[in-house]
Length: 635
Image (cartoon, rainbow, N blue to C red):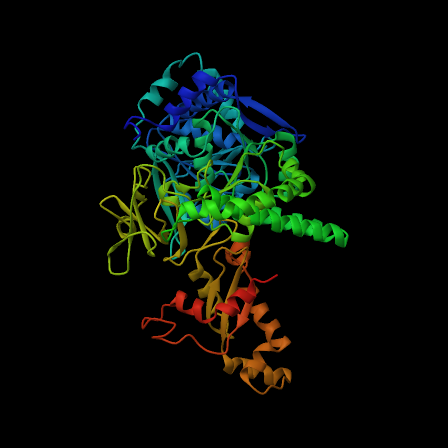
């Protein structure tokens, strides 16, 4: 267990002492070329910035906003704030103005770092809502509008650094003294995640949450100073945030890229990373790009490709059987697994070797040629994506966690990953699987996962009642349905709570979207779907009375109601209604918008698909309309 005095800055300071000349960051300059920053240089900048912040009036326990996407200044600011005992409150540039305003006001931020002029304008637009806000520091070097706007002053990040440089000699030693004051129970960050009402909740994560994770992955992911992680996830996101600290904890380095296949693959060729952490959507995108390229090839090449993929999948499955890397949900004979897999493996080996040479070798080279493994989190990894990369000989390690746990609870073992699972829980995490009646369940029994660990959040900021709903006696109710194998690895089956997690890792609360949809005079009920998919879709129960009036006005003839719902003019009507009610102008992000829909002929009935208080039974509706939902996501 981490010592009570251990903090993120203390851990990084120790690493810097031993690896000062090693690279820590690879970031692009103004002409798009990667430039390296060493641990020693980074730490000197962190000290400079920390002294400037102290001089600026930032105190231990203060909350400071960071509204920015990935860039090296983000990590510098984060470490400087944590070093002087402040906690940061981060969010990405895709946040709406209203969302930023709520977060900054709710978290009592007097100071916020903004990426550029666009984010500055969003924040200034909400300044009346956040009366404590006094200063905005802008990362962008091109920002030239520094000044005072009402009660809020803006200045450039470079200006703040210049102030810190003047203090280095006069206030020598103060930086280390501030770090020494830190405690593992101090709040490191407040990460806001949407609640069931649509109002964001601030997850209070202490330093010990991240120290616990850093220490537990050492026997699962084998990292050292030679490793380079390609960073494509939003740096403020819970998953990427933990990865950044894990990288620092093992003296490895980070290269900042973009979640765009063309940019990402070009950067991989330049950087030659050994690891990449990402959401399932990106791995799915790489696979889709490969298959699209193959589709353009002559018939013989296409046939060979699909043949070698099939060989690779079969070889991987047999190899997993031989090595005992098959989920042991029901008791099985590992001896028999080894015996029955031996001969087929020998027969497939020459074909697998040929496939590596003819098909998969080029894909590995496109990943830089040094790739060890990718870690997938933030949503379920589709089995067809998992099996393709196994066939190609590219290791994907699926993980699992929640923002409330900082987030990593589990990840497949680098040396022995078990497909179809998220691996075992990290060492020293207590857990229990709870059934519907509160009984504690054993292996191969489906229930809700509860965990107890030093990494679990302190609670939701200013929301004691909501904290009490999920935290009791140190146990966190994850709200996720799981089933454990007999030897540790487990599978996540779904979520008890309503939050939809898209394939890209985005969390979506369906209720506000559904409430907006039923504002249409043509829509009586709606249910948003899209768990582990690339986009959202919706089941729509229309107002047939209004549809029939529309049909009469448009001169549409029909026999049954189902004929009316399928008419092209009705489909166009519902499409326009959906997009008029759920769009960015109404406060919805791109990934919260509805891309496909199905009009139903039956209403959701109380006592069947709905409770008596008219809450949707999503699992019941999902089962009844399983085929319709599956059809919505077919390409």
